[in-house]
Image (tube, rainbow, N blue to C red; front, side):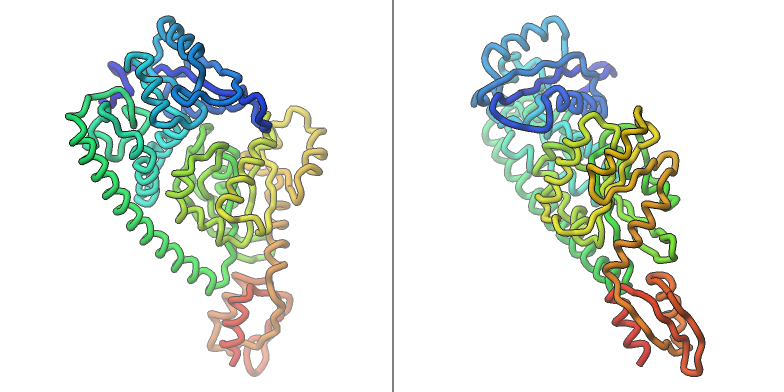
Length: 434
């Protein structure tokens, strides 16, 4: 039985946020705590209360002030929570000092540990598991203490349940800690080596895709914005969908035929979130390269969310962090069927450039969205006028599948086609024509 569960009962969690008095942010502390509560529920934790403190700056030892810590200790006597979850990342020292304030009777986690826990639960492929394990160990390494629950119990486990620095079996001393640190460093090196192999494999796969001339559209967006639902709707895929954060983690790619016949690949990537842990951004580099190598980004936006602008900014900040700022992008304003005031839709469309209102769940607006995607992709294509020998019927089929045919006729020399093609395929056709 995992440490986060007591006699089969769900852990009870208490949330703590901080509002910096002189820091301007589009996220209000109440909004961020509401999201933290959703993260906690996704991780299987029952939220029994929350609080926040307005501060000039953080307290080095305990993050929040001494008075607030004492208030939490008193609340624990009334609410009997098992874990405190901070909405910011804590240093190893702060985590340790806070746990000692509760006489090590309460686990202290931060937002990063909670997200890592959720990712560990939702990684269903070998690649996803490798990425999550690397992120976990990168997070745990500086947090090893004498209260460290031994590595044999942690491998592949969830940070949020008996995680780094949490209440657990006391280790045998400093010598064992050094052994554990060395084992973690060795494991990190091994995981990075395996993920580099994944990265090389993905790069070779993308090179083959480029030679075939199949454009790639990468779905990006805030977690739970409806990316997986949209991919299912436009491709007939069966990606798992649930009303929770990070319901799907591993990337999914599907072939889709656009209205005028062009075939493209749609790739659903991991959802973004505000304060996305740096460990995850680094560990998921191979996956996020699908975004950096895409021909077009489809930004799925939950237009009904009360802090939609904050979510859009969080996605933008993550795209900047991974170096994706110049690619063409279409905004899919999703969940229009849930708008309380349908009259507001026109104003929302005007606020987001190059946007198309849709309902992935109901199928509204998908034809317009796909037409717009096709229009933008064709802007990156070249005009082609070729005669393809009859023995190269494969190239004729490729033209129909991956390009736009404006004219086709049959001559003595072969099939005469005029139209538009991706540059890579156009070069191949010129070779085939000779």
